[in-house]
Length: 543
Image (cartoon, rainbow, N blue to C red; front, side, top):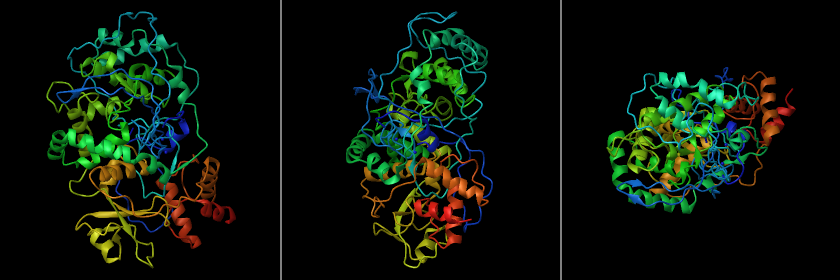
């Protein structure tokens, strides 16, 4: 979803999820060449779904597949992230790491044995029918449902637009759960789902109160991007990534050849989403999606995902009892929502099933296919860390790599600049922190989870797994980030001054950052787009 997009081992919080949008389906946006003009009216913002993950007991591998093992509640050691994946504070989990995913600390709930009216009480079992759906999901959902984590503060050059979703609704459902489930039958049948599959999917299923509760929690704190990265790109995760890179070398090589996506970014996403399969989520996906759809969370979004999940069962890609995932329905090694599964999942091992849960070749190829379909450019780095020249005037925002070299920018690792390609200046912690030149591939990563910090974590983790070095720049670790109330206040001041940043929501996206950059330029401050206490105080003093 991958986070996205604000991370795990604590309670998940809705605020965090709102702070870190999930992967979007709108066309990827390459940063524009701007010089600080006032922000234009923004597109309607969307609020991604949160997600959690549960720790899975290691399983033995057999012929490229992992034998499913029973999931147990797990507390992720990953840290809070900027993308909203890992547990509320981790940056490493299954969906939590956006770099760290916040994993739910509670055991996966088991559907009650009490059968709902008109539904067989038999043990859930997916019908293996191969009937082709007559209607497919009408929208492609984010790959990942963002897990609740603390918002991460970054100064971004823009982000991909997350899939549009209606305003949140937490009011009491209008109809009983059983009646709501039965009301889905006609829509499910229109998509090719047979009655036996439908009844088996919902047999004994009752609402999950813990899932409903997670949609109502909020976090008052904001996690700095440097803390997020520290907990997302750990030495333990790097070493685990190297082990998986060696074990699945042939599958990664095949994905590179077929889709043109470097293995480093696949490994980065895999590590950020589930810590290489360690935290894939232990929730009953059908139960979680049904709970969210019943309470009207995010309008029809989860209803559509639920119906698509039924199609997956109908097509026999996974057995009913094995369809596990995060509390928001994200599934598998790299956490696909059901609609993303239907659009991008690949049967790479040729067994007739698209199995992103236990088939590593399928999961790796599916992730590569997602990035390929969203515009990945082979051979182009996602970003390079640079050192800026003295006296840089901050007017250039986007240019070719050769042009950046002519301006005096040099790679922080001392290597030559790329010979081709265009890149934009990215200052995730303002001018006092590390500086990057990010390419269109950075924007493609954000299609997985639209958080800047998540994309930064994916790229950096993948580089480290493949032998890259630590970041050279120093983070302003002594700086205290704006809290939730201050973020709202800053946006209200910008609105008062005529900047169109939408309704204040405490989330700093492209519009807010562009407005901050323009304000900084007008006030004689360094126009890095980073909203900190200096900017807030300057806004307070401006009348």
